[in-house]
Length: 422
Figure 1 (tube, rainbow, N blue to C red):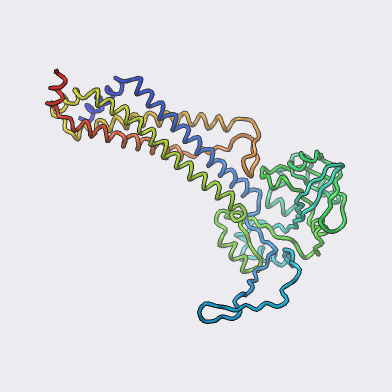
Figure 2 (spheres, one colour):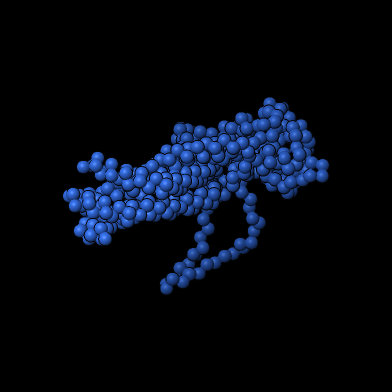
């Protein structure tokens, strides 16, 4: 019986080839667009996380002491309170980590050796970089280049120059590509660094790097000693300590533990990029809502062809019921038709989506996608996206067949045959 119903369903669809093909094409195009859109948005998020995890610190120990100040000095009944403050006017202290070498020893101890992979102290300063008549306010990051290389892999991201020249040159700088382009800088160019306080210093460009993270590529890197001199810090103080951990996607527990151990604020890369990750999450919700909406529209297209089939084939349906086909079998036949149309369109859309994803990924142009700069579009080819969209499309197409199939099941054979003979 199932084979008979399948043959009849196939004949119904092939009898209206133009309308069937148009419906399948509509389902295919919508499926392709949805899979491509999901691939683009998820690809951008995956690319962002991958680049940040490989370039930026996983946890940053900032020079912000965790020392809560009590505000409720004396409590009264009824929820009222009195706060007493004396001599609260004082100079705002800058953020700095004191005796950072002792903290480094903690990270290299047996307690954290397995979890903390690399440690790099740094000093950040707001400076003005001048070359000729060009000047840019920038962030200068003073680092121990060997330790920083373990965090960001900067040696593999240098496009011009090299680390050997950087190590051998006094007051050498590694310049982000964005800075180099804006200020027309080349390797061996001389620039002047002017800090917010203190005297200016002559520096030399020893390399130009490109990480793909716009914020990093819009900065300059110097030695840790140079950063301490510019910021006016003694040798035992730094702005912060960058950490690379073994599990960057599950680092909240370790971050909280390091805060308690060091007494300084420990910030994860997720917290530092919370606004960007939140934006990606909202975009994801919008895309998945779009998937459901377009799938419903595709379902209406499938329902339309089946309603027309029921209207045109009402006499055939009446004859089938006269030969003993039950209402349930007729419902199953039209649901099978909806399933076939949805499956054909969804599979065709999946094949088209593979082509469109590869096409977008191969376009050779550099684009700045939010916080990143990449060549070509970041496309994800996760098979789960194909399964999700194709499954939802087929399900809705199948459910869309219920209404016309219920109408076919209610037809009265005697009435239909009598009316058709007039």
